[in-house]
Structure formats: structure tokens, C-alpha cells
Image (cartoon, rainbow, N blue to C red; front, side, top):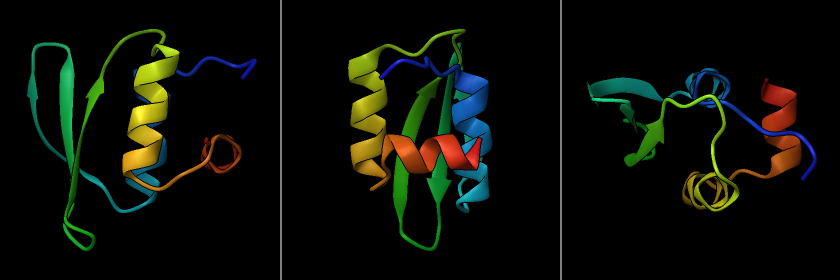
Length: 71
């Protein structure tokens, strides 16, 4: 994985997939997809760590390649 992703980029991609912002607590944004009933927490940081990104992508059933296309 050569490119790093920011919290804003990840939020933009998830909104295109139907996620809505539920609420925010500090620098973490809680998003929910009412159709699939999935909730994820996105850290609103300049760079999301590799492990955190992979856990979020696994939870929403998304690959790095499809994430790059959404951004």
C-alpha cells in the first residue's frame, strides 16, 4: 500500500457508499449505513494508520483498489 489515506478521504468514500455521519466525539467520526446496518468509527486524522484502515475496510467489505476508485 503506497498511498496513505486521510480521515476526510475515507469519510468521502464511505458517504458515496451510503454511510451517513451519526455523530462525532473528539476527532472520531461515527458513521452508519442504515441499509446494511453497519457502523464504523473513522479517526479524523491527516493519516490513518495501516491497521486501522484495514479493519475499517474489512468491516465495510471494501478493498484498497475500490477505495482508490471512490476517492
